Image 1 (cartoon, rainbow, N blue to C red):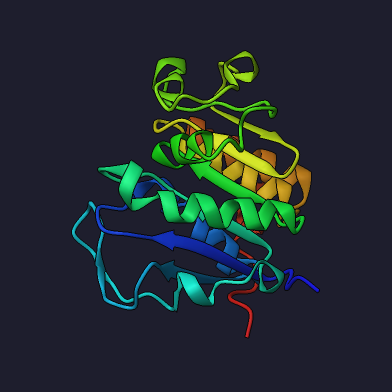
Image 2 (tube, one colour):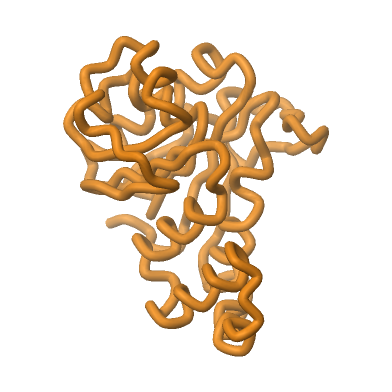
Length: 204
């Protein structure tokens, strides 16, 4: 049975760390464990220069242990992210959701996982360059969720976080709406209700 509190984050050199910078804290604040996964066990350096020691290797990653796989962008994504696109296929086959942003969406497209799902990404041309067959399902939106796949473009990490928090039902709908208005639009009227998103802290 899937662990409803365990979220796995794909990790590779030049990971676009800002793309997951908002969603991971709010997963942890609301009872989820965030576990990083790299192709190998060596430390990884993100695009922002953070040196991260992965928790797991890709060979140890099992969909049945997870509630979600997050795949963010990176430089040279075809080589760095491709192994995680294969893992994403295993997750989806097992009924476990996958969330991808920026180069992560291109990797999923190249794997054929967006051929028949509504999705978004950087621009249609970038996904078309992967040779995928899903161009008719591209949507002009910050983030899209369809059949267990969340996608977002590189300029939409807040919308990406919102879709993940909604899909996992991490926050009450009203709290999530206030949270999004606070972070996406700096709406001061949303502050008090958004504070409910701070949660009790990381799961044990």
